Structures are given as C-alpha cells and as structure tokens.
Image 1 (cartoon, rainbow, N blue to C red):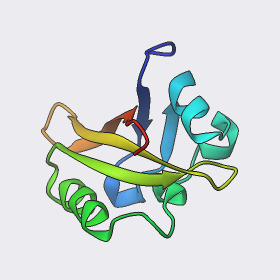
Image 2: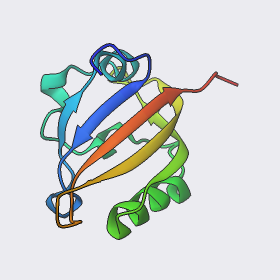
Image 3: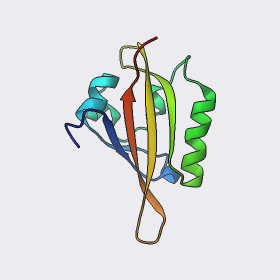
Length: 112
C-alpha cells in the first residue's frame, strides 16, 4: 500500500470528523503535504475555490449513509495549485457492521 501507484488513505470514523490516520507516498506526492501535516486532519483541507460543491455533497452523503462512492474532485496542493482526481471512498466496517474507518483511493486525472 505504501508504494501503490494511486493515493491510498485510511481515515477514522465519520462521526469523529473523519481524521486522516495514514496517507501513502502517492497521496503525499500528489498533494504536496507530508504525513505529519495531514495526520489527524480532515481532507477537506484540500478543497478550494474550484472544488465542486455537488461532488463534496456526494462524499458527505456517502459518509453519512456508510456507502461507497466515487467522484471527480478538484483539490489543491500545499502550494495552492489545483489538481483533479478521481476519489473513491470505501467504508471499513467492524465485526458488528458499524463503519469504523474509511479507505480513500485517489487517482490523478489528466489536466484539460
């Protein structure tokens, strides 16, 4: 997972503001943030002026309803430059079916 060619993150439960627990090398290269900068924070920190509110609503709805989803999302690197990626959220339930973590997968899309 550490060296996967796409971004992989593991976050905490949505009802605790979904803090980032882990981000692989591809995520850190894509966003320009170190693991120390991302850990414990919600990835909404990557959003900015061109981030589509409808895509953000789709992500929020998936978190709220414990559903997997995939959206294309414009986010911003640490230096402020925008990038577009396909973001997938996948719930990770515990033995009782309660979502305790989320996997996030992120693949950069070509610039238009």
